[in-house]
Length: 407
Image (cartoon, rainbow, N blue to C red; front, top):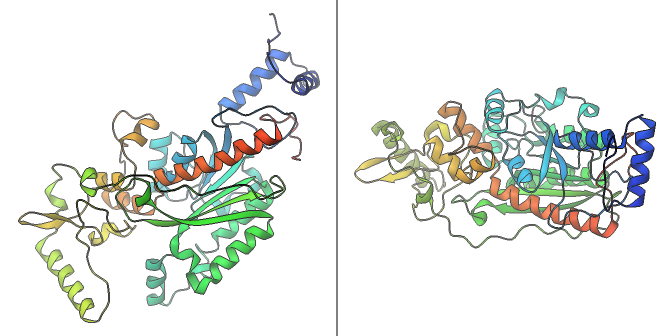
């Protein structure tokens, strides 16, 4: 074929665009198309929503790009990669989480999002962000109140990070946003925090959908409720899209299925710590409080694993015969969060995901993470909307090299 590349079944408008662009750039047809394909393969894929031409999407999915902000160890990323997405940008400030993320995904996340200019973030179709939840969580608010600290949007070091997302959205205008936070976000400060967040998203002209999802409904043996906020750009989706959050799967997860057969002895509580936890629970019970340790049901689901688990493990203790109860091991904590062998194989590991940090940091990372099974279920529902949108509008999957404006 010489310097020509045979293209079959390409619409006339696409051919016209290819011809125009390759002439402008003084490239052969083959050179231009191969360059576009290489850019997509390398993760520099143009966004789906730039409409230089009209072609049909894949029948069971659609290729899209996304950014992973406040990435942690990549729980949201796993879900959106499983749904067919390509991650083009990651931000995570914690050096220990960066270490885990780099080992699992082969990429070094960018650092503090407050020091990254929005214009330097690549174009993307979906912005995903598990923005910091401590200012809004029940545990976080109780701790800050006891210390006399501000929380929510008054917590300048964390609460206002939501507005860094707003700044990015204003500049990059991603067609889809997927945000995740603790359940308490909606009730914090008598609902005023959630009102501010929702009003900001609506003022940015996005359709806003939200729902609290429990990880136990998606196959992990842990009661873990988190709010997911999914938004669609009104400029792209002129009518409110038919988006539905995922329904619970038919599963009965059991804690015993994620436990190691012979955990090391040092995870068993010392006599001193076990006595302290029992006395602590007794004192609070006498005051009518619900604080105390939690002995887990091996045939059921556990309480929520928190980032403070490294301190004493009190919220999830594993009963043992003729012994004091024990903490979860870091490997068990990983499995409890759904970072299991299946996720490991998806990311290219033969066995389980490597834990490359100390026990303390591992507990913190898993306690702060997003359950991959839940993010996968949400991502697939988003992809259904994308497929429907592009099928109905017959929009282009490639944008012009000049970066033409969206419709």
